[in-house]
Amino acid sequence: MERPYQRFTMAIIFMPISISAFPCFADDAPRSASPVLTFDAERLSIPFQRFTTKDALGRTITAYLSPSPQDSKNPIPVVLWIQGSGSQSLFSKMPDGRISGGMQNLLFGLSKSRFRVLCVEKPGVKFLDSPRPPGTAEKASEEFLREHTLSRWAAANESALAAVWTLPGIDKSLTLVVGHSEGAIVAAKIAADMPQVTHVAPLAAAGPTQLFSLAELAARPRPNDQPGDAEKRRDKVFADWKLVQADPESITKFWMGHPYRRWSSFCQENSVAELLRSKAKVYLAQGVEDQSSYIGELDVVRAELTAHGRDFVVERIAGADHGYRPVKAERAPGKPKEFEDLLDRIVTWFLK
Image (cartoon, rainbow, N blue to C red; front, side, top):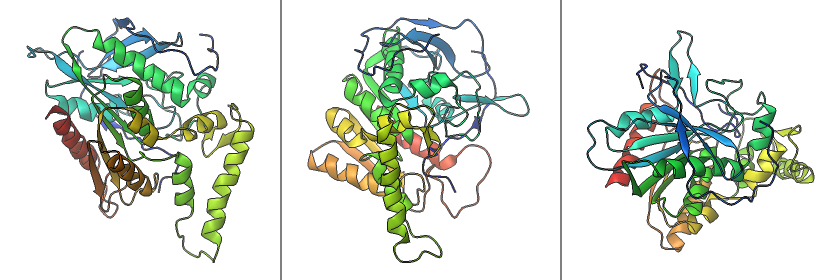
């Protein structure tokens, strides 16, 4: 069973194909309008082209874009993928030497020349970094610990997306941002910050502050619980949060696998507010048996979007976990079919 803070990560194997000093802590820098991108000359055994660009904070951002389809005669849109928590790279090396990738690879497989897939490496993370345990920052670089706040991570993604919009052959009238787990609130924030984003899919973590989810997950009934035990666990979450608030910029004090600086950034914001601030169409999906994000998050954001008359699709998937797999089903190796099927439905909705 995953710990609540471990936002879901997964490696997908595919066949290879051709294809500074720390900045200040200020998170309120203006977004750059049209970043310039430079493609990397190095050929990587992944179905993406690596490029770099500068963001509004002056950082060099590394990102990956699937190649332009040779058979595409008209401009096609871009789909930005945002992974969950942790300091692992988007790609990792398997024991047999092959390179595996996360859900961006599933999106690439679903693209079929209809869109290009964009994904961004977290600042402070290098290609193929694979620290253990995944989903946490316990073995992260100091740069990552300083850089990984909601605002700074969103800025990195926004600069890469703005840079890709400048490329020929990109349809700027249609853009989808998909974020899973920790990536859900990042996706929602990007959609709010960038009005050009037309569709957003915050998956398995959209809702009010993550403190709500952490507290409710802690209070779930456990074997051998005595009266009052669940409430004590809920109270401890809020007591621990007060410790975070007492030293919100610390990168040396950790709570549930992440530094206080990360928690103080992410927990003071929420997906509901960002989605209501955006104009994008919304696709929500969460497994009822999710042990990493409380299912009540989905109900909160659904109610808020309904109350405000927003255009959205919602999937409340019975029997499914954080990665949309049936909890009672035997886990087969290879591609997570249920997640792939969900992404396929989202892509169909986006291109409809």
